[in-house]
Image (cartoon, rainbow, N blue to C red; front, side, top):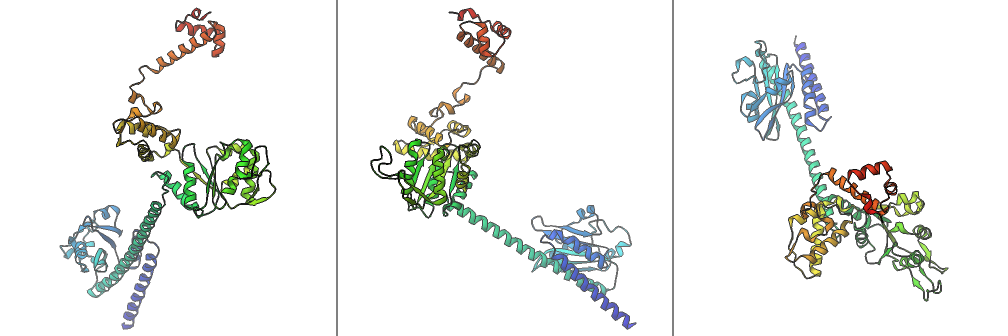
Length: 518
């Protein structure tokens, strides 16, 4: 008999150790505590004498204790299980941090049965054990079970086992909380450093806070310290030259020359001489040796604007400079080595030019090592007023004028206009407005007619679309008759109409073709 008790006790210890090992493995499976409480409860329920069990967590903001996971409870019963600190057995355990053993549920008036799960008299005979889940001295919740009635020693053993499991859960929560806090800290620190770097690297010659321009600033920062060839693309007037300036003056070549060449402004007959220089007597007007832009830019940067307008022969020679880092002056035989960084820019579609064989494919790939796209002004609306303020300050100082503000109607015109000429067009508009203002305010009537709206000029359309189209049709008919000197057949051909349709339309608008004769 004694041996059987020893064996039974020994087996119980083995079962407990096996349960604790299984729970430890479950707790290692996920960083999300919500994903592990249910498997822990199920493991306890399957291996332990437990009719039902719950893990409740305290919400510090609301002061409510809610069921996070349950074993043997329906979803509706779980939703009912809400307690406040000190309320019922669970509330008292969370409030005090002291575990509770209720040998018989029916004998304890403090047991609330808030979930409504224990209705039968048999279930009221069950024991209830509730232990706190603590991190240090802070109670974060409770672990409770309903178990079959038993003597005090067995209930104490169950309490001890549940306390160990609750401690394991608390430790898992603590570790996960620490890891999440560390991740959050690292993420915040990473974001702070990125913001600091972005703020630190903002080229002084370029105005803009928009996300589109921040991407451009990032690209400038990435490429400046290298010697990579850069291709700056964007519509006319977006500030491609400013980007080239920013790259050069933030590079290791900043102390060396920055040479600009507008490939579209130079005739084909002189572009080669401008780029590579010429020897004395190379052509009629070559009265002396002259260094080209590549030679002058040695050690520094050369900016080739409007690269898409280069002739085919010049493209070949430029390709050699990119590949071999060498060239000859026009009329010369000596090969000149060069150490130049090339930044090219264009507002043309080079891919389409390659399809029509007007731009070399091999040159394109040599130039397009690090492309930077400058967004049009219409895609960076938030920068319009920043740029306007900058240009107002610039031209007010140049013209010795005091401009204090931009009127609200003028702001609306500036921000709603589509700016086909981009930043250059905006600069011209602001310069004009600064010259016109006489009361220290930029008003809407100081802006060019192209920016004006029907509302700002009081020229709203006073006719319907149908009427406007009829007026236009009548006008076109009269213009054609006037050009044809009243000849209906000729006027019909000019408008792409049959003579019958021409006759019907002339009759509709009561037009007398005879007045156009002679």
